[in-house]
Length: 104
Image: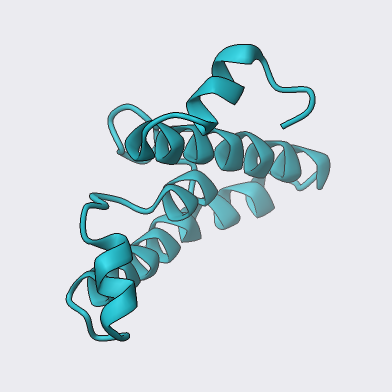
């Protein structure tokens, strides 16, 4: 947690929902920086971003699979209160507040 502002560090130590939202923000920030650092052409970047909603859908389906106990009881208990996956939303550049894909 080095280098993070105090409010972000506090969120990562907070209640589960606050932690999930902060994880999503961090992953989204990293993913956006990674895309920028690849120096993709406009067409390549557009193609990549076009695929992100499909990846998000697959991740969301996996979360629902866990919540239904289809991957074993411990997973069901662990993910029971999750309304979204912060990793999937962050990696696919979903807005952390609205949980909708961000327009880029």
